[in-house]
Image 1 (spheres, helix red, strand yellow):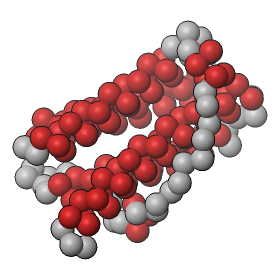
Image 2 (cartoon, rainbow, N blue to C red):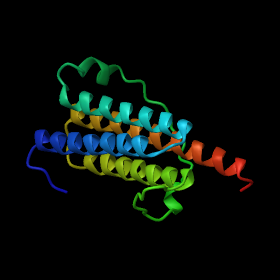
Image 3 (cartoon, rainbow, N blue to C red):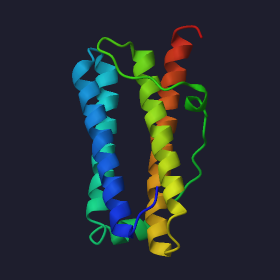
Length: 153
């Protein structure tokens, strides 16, 4: 990935956040599991928040500057999973696998995008997004672990 300007990079990231929000909204509509639906709708809301952050960077400058970074552990569950494509009627376990893999890819993307700029303000925004995606990945991996434990795995 190469970008001729930071603005183009941000537009690319906004589009990825839109895609993620649409993905979670679509899955939420298609699932009959209420707990799964709630989690997916929460993920959609988070992705829309990221899109808003990116789309209004000037208005969100203070939030980015005051962002409290914390270490987010990586359970690495998705690292050992293969890519899957959603199919109607897919079970909860597979839905979680797809979602975890998407968040893993988003985290990798924002980490890679950090190498495209030396501007400290731009780096900070990308680090905020990395942290947010790492939180999503951890949340989904926790749901997956809990679900698998309930299944006796």
